Length: 463
Image (tube, rainbow, N blue to C red; front, side):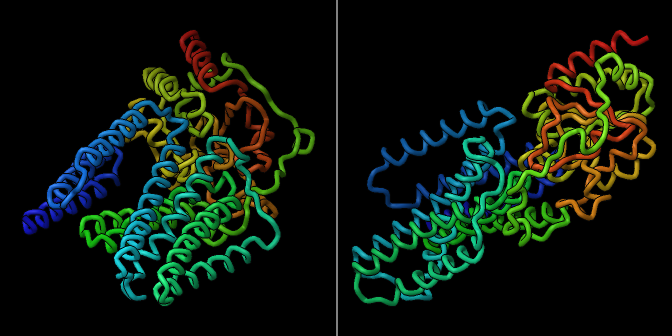
């Protein structure tokens, strides 16, 4: 039976790798997700078959409950809440990994067979990283859900305090296998768990909302690493492979997100960017040029090229279908329509791609930042729907700006820029955007869904 299970694990691992590879392209992402899910089904099934389980009914009931909750959540969650769901799933994975390590440690203590330091490292590492991932993901969820302020919250010397706290927790972890007394080991294990939970909160609180795509990717990497460590604790090869894939892909994605903002991962995590709101009023920048659906409709109707820049406001309004309808109406008039996607637009990596895919926007109309930026000078109309920080020209023009040097979509180079926002409020980074006051920019105020519906109607009525 062992050889059959190992063969099944190998098949599951191959399916995981194929699934991750297919996630690289939007056209194959759905099948990639299903392929990886099939691998997980095989892994779980053969783990259960090959294990001596004392209470099969309870275990199967928990598996069924988790499957039902997961399926319902995936179908019921709104696209605006997708980042929150990702944060929750990250947290659950990290928390589960930490509990596995704690459970194994408690069983070892009960049997008087607690391993020495080299053998105990995976479990202790699992408790530390898994617990940080759990509470860090909870804080990320609460910020995204706006249960707590999304801006960075830091106190003077917080990074130093966090570093000292981390060193102390590592010292506790190293001490656990060394002390001879079982009661002391138990106390130290719980100190490690609780301390790591606290560190997870203190670690994520100084990260501002504008950096949330990066922190979600990093927490995803933490969860994967914790899962891999749990695989070593349980001596389960497929769990090691799955955790390593998630950990490595999450790490790579974190670095890509940081590079997209032209900031080091150290700066993202420890600079408390966005802790202060520096937005200014209209009087500081110049005059705002408001517009209406009829004027925007005429501009788009007679344009040769229109570039649409989606942002979080599009997700909040759930207006992706209206955006697709607008694209169809413009294409029917012979307009070249493209979508410009910034790597950190939205609240999680790939947020805008998923949003537009849900409305069946063709993948070949989605352009990455590097591909679309040279085209803005030859673009007649740029329509920005709910985006803010990723189109802020201060990142390119103002050395004094907090986001100076961050690669952006160079929309200000187009002939006409239409910005659809509900108000003049600052974006998630909390900084002013001079784009709104430029002479070639017009502000089209209103909720994205209603604004696009009015624009569609105006486009139909355009001669």
